[in-house]
Amino acid sequence: MSTDFDQSTAWIRRAQGDMKAFVEGLAARLEGDMPGLVEVERKKDGFFAKTSHVHAITVHTDNNDYLLTHEGAHISTIRAKTVRGVVLKHEDLPLAAWLESLVKDLGDLSGQMQGASNTLHDFLMG
Picture 1 (cartoon, one colour):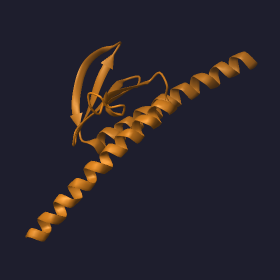
Picture 2: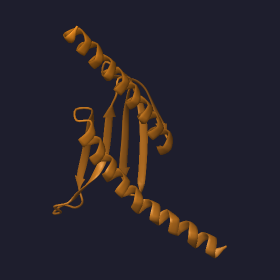
Picture 3: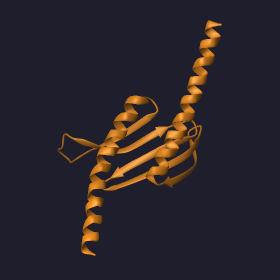
Picture 4: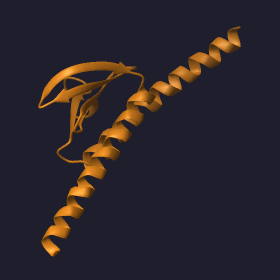
């Protein structure tokens, strides 16, 4: 039993370290790829520290706002149904489901923007 316990705790420690890098990478990618739709909140690593870490990421899509918060070893992910800036419903999601939903909503938003761009192009060139 002790080896199973040791292996489990080792995986948990590794996942926590990987998760910090994941959150930092996700924030950098989203900020760079979707300016104006993403807000990243950073906190200093200490009172006199010059370094900081990502505390929260918010992504705004047409129908939902996605919030990821990273506090120590804990990550929470929320999808909020938002209409004209008013939150009608919010639900806590597991990280994998949150990412899948975010990717789907970003795909839908991309399709809408591409359609609008094509229509505008046809109108101006036609």
